[in-house]
Image 1 (tube, rainbow, N blue to C red):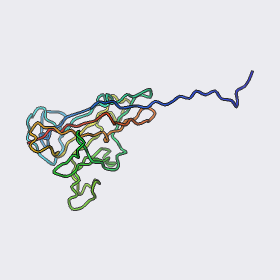
Image 2: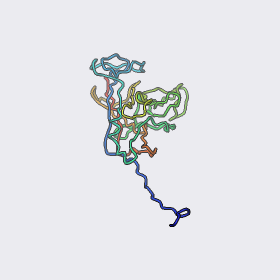
Image 3: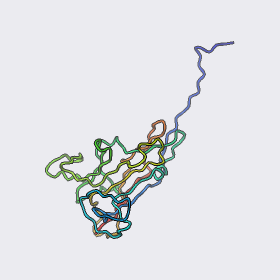
Length: 219
């Protein structure tokens, strides 16, 4: 009998990583609901920086949720399932928000950026007004306007991902095309607001998939 002390018999197991699909997760909010009370339970009761003209007092909302199932449909998790989505706490340098045609998003003619805010553990979308000071592309609460936030509002305290929800809350107006009309929508691409990792903490890069918030115009 030979004793295998120094020799080794090894099976190398190659890793598998999650990949994204050509798919879209989308929700819709209405500028009409800014600073308004509606019958929609998702509508935020916070104080907004603009006030809309309600079209549908029952259904209009300035806040809406992405569910875990919507986000899971964007990826193929692979062998090391599941993929867990979270607010992207690595987004510490502000990036410009793009619309679905890859144009810069603006609010009152100011470029809109988004960045992770450590204090509130959420993504802040801000209009880079720099009123009286501040640096371009850097969030400064003294000079910039918060246009929207993205935060995890359910599931963060449980081990399972199935109950996870992420809420987009619109706080101020988004610039639509001139004379676009009351029903016009502008899609905000928020891929960089989220991160997804599998059980081995391999990150999925959302290149083909898109996470979009459609903002309906108000007139």
